[in-house]
Length: 626
Ligand SMILES: Cc1ncc(C[n+]2csc(CCOP(=O)(O)OP(=O)(O)O)c2C)c(N)n1
Ligand SMILES: [Mg+2]
Image (cartoon, rainbow, N blue to C red; front, side, top):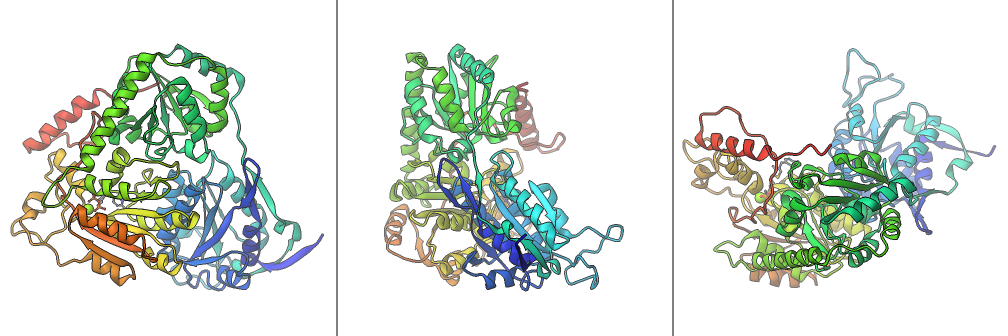
């Protein structure tokens, strides 16, 4: 047997560079590079291997480990999970900084390969710098914290163990039902140990991503349910986009007249002006989608995991006897809501269902009703885009300006705060990959880092990152990486002096926006928003901060100036930050939906008591969907 003598880390880098993925024909590289931040736990192991074979796997220096996982996840999402980036870190804090990124990737079902360094397998120099000592267990390290947030986890205790572990990692990363974060924990000594690896391990290997279809019985049953339905509704999730099923969906909707509502991850499944498009569904949904959801008799969920935002905490689908048919690669998701499970690829399954529904369409009256609601919604969007609110503009006007001045193929990126909900309702998506809001984990700090990954995945598109001041303060440092990699981002920094979303939530539940405004405390105030408003503004200048990180900065005071800056930004080659202050109290309304957030059962406050009463009334509408 031909062997190659390499260190474990060198073998790992060679293996990663040889992995390819194929769906519908053309194989492509699975790992397009490796993000990293070096420390004593990886600089001489994986670091040496990356430096030795720099042409094998491009190394990207990041600024924060959590951020680099977000960038890798953003990259993977943009590439429909058919490619990603690896992430290498030192041991200890460098490693555990990736835990949040791992959770975000796993919850969003996005493949990322995490390679945290780990303490010596030999245990000879214990305790090493940054080692957690557990008196009762010799085999535990901080990297065990990755276990619940990884879809596959292993610790490479001997160099030859890399062979089965790397293959298992690839199996999980490329399996569309299993994918998420994969963690290979790499003890720092083992990274540098040599072994005679079989040469075959490094041969190009193509991982096939198939398009499976459910069995005929399940498909026939589903088709019968659709034929029997009078008011069917498709809920399109991220799976529609990952499976590249958007054309198939568009054709199906045109032919049958079944309307489509979109989840956050599924937004872009249909162009916003498609006749069957009802827009966003659920807590952050449109009036059109939520009205139809409330009265539909069959939900066809495609590639959705039915989060509480989608189901309005199980109150959205209020029709008596409403049934669910769920198309999903994962049986775990397909079986939710008591649904008839169609376990399979979204595109192939939709096509198979379409064949069985030849000649069938919804009643013209239902088609007209949906179209009318869709049209009314579009007028509501126009109203919110042109609110003319003052003296500070409303966030909806900022969204309108960015939407109108970005190109149809450009991508908007966001993750947390009040913007994801407003974008879900208001963004006019024109391309299946044009809307990228991380709302599975809704990680403050994803925005700029994730935007970097999106841009790296498709440099031919302009990337508009919409970030709140709170999220910006949590994680803005990848601006530096975007400049280093010449990956231009246009970042719109929406400054409303703190956590507008949580402040609003707090006020709506009777707790006055406590602890959500960035201000000095007014004398005697306990931190509620109203009292804080009287306090002095903090001497914080986020635009100056962005400038200090190397961005080209525009400070704008109005929507007009924002529009000018967006036009001027197109000509600038490096990352741009446009800073705009907005009115924290001017939000986009809720359209007949409810989100379950618990409220104190006992309190002396009349506002809290009132909120508790509303909570109890609303939660009585919750359904089991068994
Ligand atoms: C890492 C993290 N911490 C806390 C939260 C809870 N949270 C959700 S939105 C939000 C405030 C976001 O503030 P900002 O980015 O300014 O957006 P705004 O609400 O003002 O629109 C907080 C604290 C979160 N989603 N992520
Ligand atoms: Mg804010």
